[in-house]
Image (cartoon, rainbow, N blue to C red):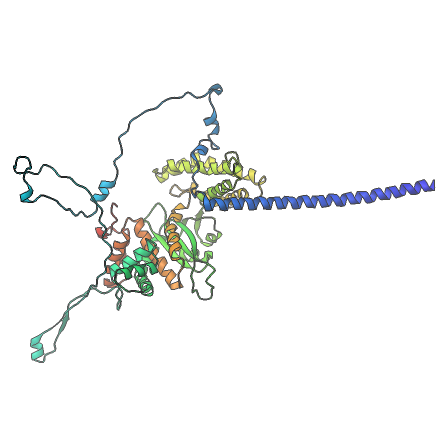
Length: 535
C-alpha cells in the first residue's frame, strides 16, 4: 500500500513537471510565433519598399488611374457591371465625321519676324523657249525656313561730353561745366549691362544652364569671362530685384488664400554647419484669386519658425502638405492636400507583388475615394466660388464622410508600418486639414499649385547642384521669385529683366512703393515688349 501511494505521488510529481514543461513550451511557442509574425511583417515591409523603389526607378512616374480601373471604381461598379437579366449588352456601330483641326504652325510663324527672299528671272531670261515671246509673272511658290541667329557679344561704349563756356574762360569769370546726361549703370565699375545681366539670369534660372557652361559658351563667342565674375553679376543684380521682392511680399501678405511648400538645397559654405546637411528653399505663392505671386526664401533649416516669420501678418487659408512645421503659423486655417493622400494609396498599389490584382485591394478602394473627389473638382473647374461651395456640400461632403468611415474600419485590419497602413494613418492624422476645402469655394483640393511652382527650382538644382554661400542662395531665391512671378503673369523673362535693370537704377527713390508697383509683373504699365509671345 505504501509503495502504491509512493508511485502515485511520483506520477503526480511527474505530471506536474510535465505540465510546467508544457506551459514553458507553450510560452516559447507563443514567443516564436510572435517573433515570426514580426519578421514576416518586416519582410513584407521590405518587399513593399523594394517593389516601390523598383517602380520609381524603372516604372512610369504618372499617378493617373488607368481608365479600365476608373470604370470599375468603388462608386459605380454595380452600375457598370449590371445588365438586364444577365444578358450581354447589345453592340452598336457609331460613325461620324468631324472637321479636321488646323494646326498652330502657321499662326506661330506669323508672330516671328519674317525676312523675305525673292528669286526672279533677269530681263534677258524672261523669254519663252517655244516662241521667243516675253514671259509674264503667273504665280509664286513659297516655302518657310527657320533661321537661327546665335548670340552675339558686342561692347557698348558710353561716351558723354562735357561742355564749358569759352567767353567765361577768356574773361576769367566762373566757368559753368555742363555734362550731357547719361543713364546710370546697373553695376557701376563693371562690364555688366542690363541685357547681359538679363541673359545670364535667364540662361541659369529659366534654361537651367550652370555658370560654368555659360563661361564656356562666352569663350566660344570670343569673350573670356570667369564664372566667378558671372556669379558676382547675379548677386549684384539680385540686389536690385530684392526691391521688387520685398514689394511683392507686401502684396502677398494682403491675400487671404496662399500656398506653401519647401524643398532641399545644398549650401557648401554655411557658417557653423557642414556641407552635407541640407538647407531649404521655402515657397509661398498666391492661389486662384489675386495677382499671381511666387516667392522663394532660403533658410538653413526646415524649422516651422521660418514660415511663421515670413508669413507674419497673414491671416486666412494656407494650403500645405503634411509637414507639421506649418502649425507654428498663427491665425491661419491649414488646408491639406488630397493629392498627397491619394499618392500614399498609389504607392501601396505600386508596391503590390507582380501579377496581383489591384482592383480588389483596400489600397484601390482608398484611391477610389480620392479619385471621386478629383472627378467632382474637374466638373467644377469653371464654376464660380459660390457654385463650387454648394456642389461640394452636396456631392463631395458625402464622399468625405464615407471615406472617414472606411478609414476607421480599415485601420484595425491593416499593419501600421505597411504602405497601406501609412496611407490610412496619413489621412486620419491630416483629417482636419483635408476637410478644410469644404469651407470656401475658392479653396483647392490639393497643393499642386505649389508643387508646380517649385518644380523649376528642382529641375535647375539637378544642373547646378548646389550654392556656394548663403549669400548666393539668397540671391538665387530672389531671382527665381521675380522670374517665376513674371512667367505666371505671361511675361518674357529676358525682356522683363532687361527692362527692370534699365529702369530701377534711374529711380530717384528706389524704394518708392508707387514706382515699384508700376514695374511689378502684373502691372498694366509694363511695355508690350515684356509680354511673352502669344500672351
